[in-house]
Length: 113
Ligand code: DGP
Image 1 (cartoon, helix red, strand yellow):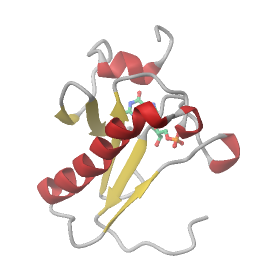
Image 2 (cartoon, rainbow, N blue to C red; image 1 turned 180 degrees about the vertical axis):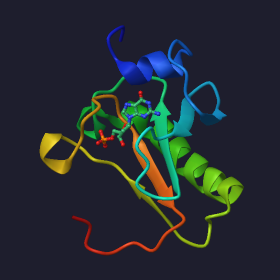
Image 3 (cartoon, rainbow, N blue to C red; image 1 turned 45 degrees about the horizontal axis):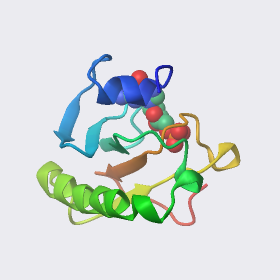
């Protein structure tokens, strides 16, 4: 989508601190980190949110989680990290291109706010 900031990042039109990419996914450091390690993992395909995902997106959603584990190992946080998806405005979603936050490098509370 031409007016989507994460589509532009995935296409390399907007610079980002990319830590992983392949033909399906891109992962880059969050502009406003909430933990020592805060990486966003996005599918290249534009979906506004998890609510728009269907069975055909099962493979890419699985790839996101496998990439999260691999990136956590690369970043040295495999002892404790969180993968978060904010789905919809009331859950805190501000960028409407499906993304998963990989957070680690600090202690975290539960339940999340
Ligand atoms: P969410 O609130 O779940 O929609 O998370 C959106 C995140 O995206 C938020 O933590 C800040 C981050 N973000 C927004 N714009 C940019 C950008 O242009 N570059 C990067 N690296 N991160 C961004």
